Image (cartoon, rainbow over all chains, first blue to last red; front, side, top):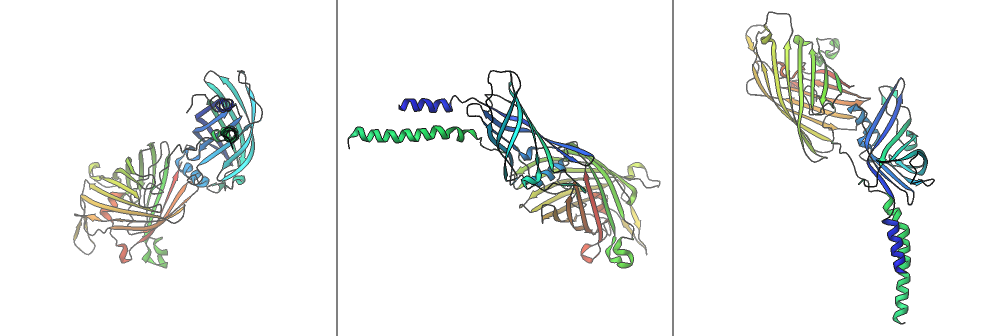
Length: 177
Length: 291
């Protein structure tokens, strides 16, 4: 009996099919009248556990770069990155993924997204493709800054649009640390 | 109670524990440990200059900074002269560009003496802790007087070299010390109104001090003092400035009272003639805009 439980525990932990990344890309796009700018980070970390369908991603918000140092600093101030350093998602795949298919699979994840100290339930649509290099993930959604108690910053007198478009891209492998 | 029964109860408890462990383990192991991927050192000063003194703040790579610096006449002119705004004022406008995160170059032009200046700043190192870093940089510039006169080009040139040592003393207080050498190829002699001659020094050593006190995330108080060490130009005084800077929408606005209308550092060292503490100071402002 004891052996059976040990075997079950081992099967859950050691044989979990987990793929992960430490260098995924996060892009946010902001709009102001007559102008659009993006911020990029290549330090997205996360994993997908195909055994229990859990999905866990986070990015250090201070790593986002818009191409203008002063704007990056303003952004860090607005997001209070020293107090709330991460944007993070933890949830579950809504449906199982066919681990043997090499065609693009549309996936949906439901879970909790945390930003600026506020956590919201969200649903994100994305896709997964199994390639030689690993599982290629793409997902996109949009968020409203006010939902996360973030006051949209002003560029001069022009206010940044409250709606932000978020895109993530990553290749997840079973050997990422 | 026999041993078999005891063992049976123990075994049952262990099964329950293992069952819970089996259920809980994926949840515990599922969420990754959060780790910072970058460290952002606090900015010692908001802009590339404290007021007239170059600061340790470095322009990031591929960023361009446009600066307008303005120093009006003496506040002691009173209401009749609108507290110095009617008097002759010095204006410098300039561009700086970040070649790398640690090296920037710039060019500017000042109204007084029609001075063009080429300048460069390089961050050499950052030491200390993330919360209390010390930044060491070098700054140099070459100035050229472009007034319409008979001077040879070499006689129009001046230069300045300084070491900038900035330190975040606390989360709110920044200090900077800047030993500097200023040089004029031609040390001019000026006939003083009422008789006599004043000679300008060719080589001037200064030891600049600056501080910033952060009031809020966007507003700070600034002060700088630039005493001359040793030989100095006749009639010159040590420059002192006191101001506030305000960060808003990608701009840094600096408003200050200063005892010098000169803006290029070697001219500040040589030609400042007023004493702040005698009430001889004027209003000025700088605007820095990063593109």
